[in-house]
Amino acid sequence: MYSIGNRVEWLQGPGANCAKTGPVAPRPWHLVLLGPPGVGKGTQAEKIIGEFGACHLSTGDVFRYAARDTSGQAPSPAMATALAAMKRGELVSDNTVVELVRERAGCLACQYGFLLDGFPRTLEQAHALNGILASVERKLDAAINYFAPEPLIIERLSGRRVCKQCRTGYHVANKPPRVAGRCDACGGELFQRDDDKPEAIRTRLQAYAATCNPVLEYYRRQGLLREIEASGDPEAVFAHTRAVIEKLDPVARR
Ligand code: AMP
Image (tube, rainbow, N blue to C red):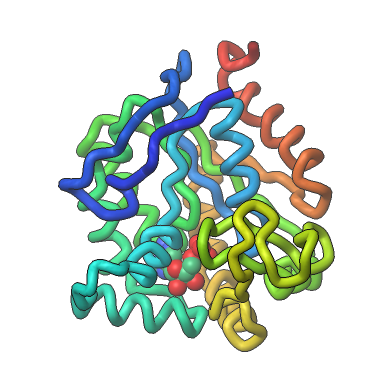
């Protein structure tokens, strides 16, 4: 079971030093996770990391981290615009997201490998990622695309709740807390993310539908795309994910 450091370099940007604690996997993985919001990429990412190592690099997490910044410093104008777009469920501009990833190229070169989640979302971002990876002499092993019917995705997103204190995730129907509105782990108050509210969910799914096909095609053409049906429970979906990763490199099978 792998458990990797605190990702501060990814969340805060260059200058912050990650406390890397876990053992390095025998083979560092370089993976991109694709799929609509709410399909379960975050949950699969946690499971992949536990079993195969690699650092979970989510661009959405970088924006959420900036949104909760308690340093008292005002966000940069680019970050303020990005956070306003995120709140509405819209995509942040390619320039801003690509710059943010470029600044964090060191995370892509990390000895633990990486699992990119939520990036790239557009063809332009996919091209940019290619260039950034080349600059740190890394290559993608695969782009894993998760898909599920839209009504199921809407149900997953709209029922999602998060603890204000420790960020543990819940679902009102599928993973309810023991006491309504309170975190089992720390007793913190549970809340619904702005971008999980109905209007923002619609906007997010439209944004995904408008940009996903060229990205999928880009990775399909390179022979990197792997597709996984993600309607089942997280363990069943992970069984497929594990099989896909092990097939990429049989050495990974333990
Ligand atoms: P996520 O957690 O991946 O669903 O991301 C949350 C929000 O952050 C998205 O709805 C966008 O507003 C923004 N975001 C994250 N990653 C990207 C990206 N690669 N391109 C554009 N916007 C992004």
